[in-house]
Length: 143
Ligand code: FES
Image (cartoon, rainbow, N blue to C red; front, side, top):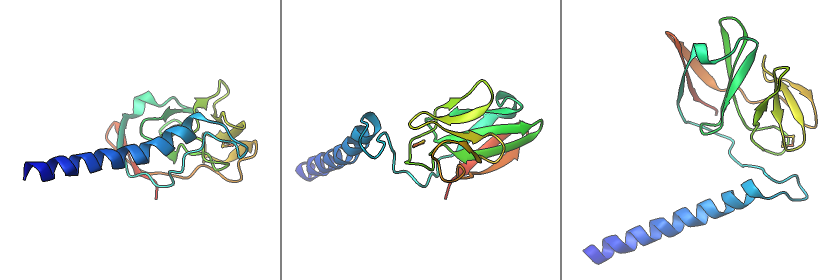
């Protein structure tokens, strides 16, 4: 019985390695198609943040959870996937003039609606579902 359990663990470990290796390679290399792309199109992670952490007229990127949360005007919040619509890089910067910036090929998105402002991205950031619960924002996912 114990031998069977060991076998299962080895297979699970090999499976995890097989899955993570390609992701690691795409995340660290640039190629002729733009590289650095992630293939995640759905996200069901839950993110809970304080409303007071989101600056008015700007936003915050949560890279570990894959979301951007913005507050275009005081008391109005929005949430988006952090995946750029160009070639799938995660956006990683909010500029000093409050634009969401994809560093891969310099696409810029608005903190109000995630609309494309500049660069090769063909369409806006994907909206994420969220709820305001008291003084917190609970981001629930992107489908
Ligand atoms: S992936 Fe090319 S600009 Fe974002």
